[in-house]
Length: 345
Image (cartoon, rainbow, N blue to C red):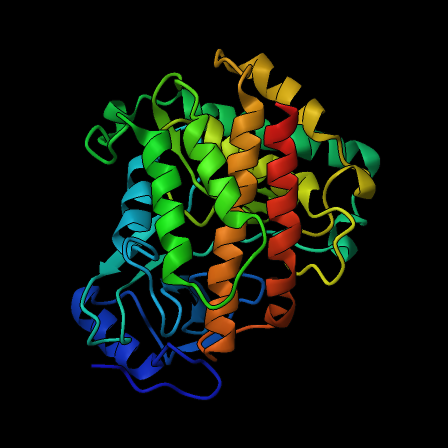
């Protein structure tokens, strides 16, 4: 059953949410709830909810078209719970609801962490050159810290299936592409086939964030990373997939017009280059980076498939937010860069 929605907050019924919290977490909420949709996200919907004194964050899947295994609220909630107390900063997980009778889909509530999420050139241009450098290297340090955690030590030994991880990832995203098929995209099938034919042997197993980038972290007033967000794609597998994906967000969108996805980062905005980020990561990690081009090409493919899914939901009027009308035009250029990366490798 789909929960009724207000025009102001599609996907979030504050009255039902309040009633649910009063039962499941008595005393947590002291007053009438208000909320706002956090703009900038391109997948799961994120809301800041307040009772006038305290604030929390509510996460739920997008409206409408939801692909199998995607937008798993229990996955995000479990990652936050597992990483609490580690060197990787995460918000405190408050409550998970897997009953879609409340908001029309599963959701979870987590701590609201104050700070800035850098999503635009207007935001990042307020940083000094040294701050951009330091924040970039800190981003790599946190990623290396994540990859150094033994999954079993935080209760995640059975969280994923590391054997055959890369082959399975290529198959999974190829399947996701077919599930969102609405048009032909030049070269995307060729890229999928070439990735499948050239899968690296793979290295040590670690925790994979799945969508690690600057605008998925909260930066505090002291320019320290206070929390890593958006764990919906997290798993146990090859950590270098995070590194390849980050590089695509960092420089892969450079020069692409009407880009609402990755802005304000990379050398064109006064940040270090991807190569400098890789070097910093290598200083903190023992992983072999010799096959990094494959991981970079896979990053281009994965983001292209994600954006094609967003484009699909946009043309079906199932996506909330601004800038989605331009997402479809980014897919083919990303595919071309992925093919060029594999050719050079």
